[in-house]
Image (cartoon, rainbow, N blue to C red; front, side, top):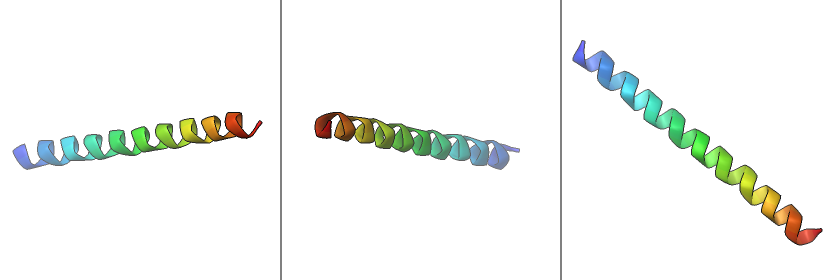
Length: 37
């Protein structure tokens, strides 16, 4: 049971890291577009 909980937490943490990277990436693209415009 404990192992399953640990796995779930790890999955959630990884998922949040991916979301953060995606958000930062899209923000950077918007900033670049504003600078070029």
